[in-house]
Image 1 (cartoon, helix red, strand yellow):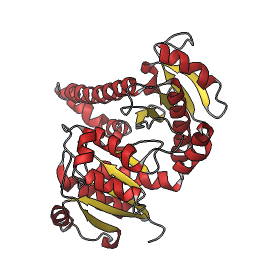
Image 2: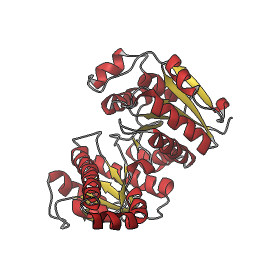
Image 3: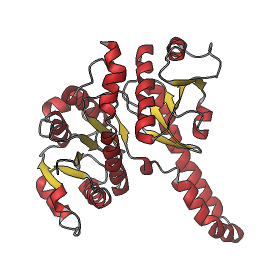
Length: 338
C-alpha cells in the first residue's frame, strides 16, 4: 500500500452526479493496479453507489465524508472560504496534509483554481499556475497552456508556461524534444499584440526548450507544435472553438450519412473506420487538465464528465506522479527565479 499513488476524487461537483464519478472510480481501480482512491462527498450517497459494484479491490477505495458542495454559480474565493466542508476543499486539504498525492474534480473551475492556490499553494518561484489540457491533433496531442486560469499574463509568465509545458510533454507524454509554439496572428516575429511581441524574444533566448516560433490557430489541429503557449483568454477561446467545431462536424457527418439510401449504405461501410478516426479526437481519452506549478497535482475534468473521463484522469494522475514532474519544475524552473 505504501507504493500506491493516492488520488482524491471530488464526487460531488460533476453535472452527471455521484453515480458517474463513482463508476469511473471503480473502473479506474480495475484498470490501474497501483492507485488508491479517496472518494470525497456525502458518505451515504457514495456508499449507496459503491454497493452497485462487485469484483473490485475495496481495500483501495476509501470514502471521505464532505457535507457541502460548491455550485458553479457561487463566487469562487468566497465559496472556498465559507464552505470548509465542501468536497473540493476537503479533497484539496488531503493533498496539503500529505494524505493524498492528487485531486480530480469536475466541479467549479474557479473554485478549484482558487482552492488550489490558497490550500495546496504554488511552487516557490512560479509566478502563475496555468491550466493545461491535452488537445487532439492529426499528429497525436498537443498541450494548451494556459486554457482558463489567468486571462491576463506577463511575458515572464508565458516563458514559465513554455518551460513547464515542455517538461510535461517530455516526461508525461514521452515526446523527447517537444516543439514549443507561441500563439499569434501570423508567423512573422514582428506580428502580434504587445504581450506576444515581448514574449517572442524571451522564448528565443531559452536554451532549455525547443522554441519553433509563432503558430497560427488554424495550424494547431494539424500538430504544428507540441506545446501551445498563450494567455488564458486566447487559450480558452481556442479550446471552446475546438470542442464546438468537433461536435458540429460529427453532427454534420451523421446527418449526411442518413440523408439518402445510398449515403446510408455508404455510411454503414465506412462506419468502423470513421468511428476509429473520430475516437482519436475524443478528449475523454486524454484525461483532464492539470494546474501546473503547484505543490501537489490538481486536475480539472469537464463538468459533463462521465465514467470514462474519470478513469482516464486517474491514469493520468498516476503517470504524472511517477514522473515526479513537481520536483522537476522545482529544480529546473522555479529555482532560477529565487
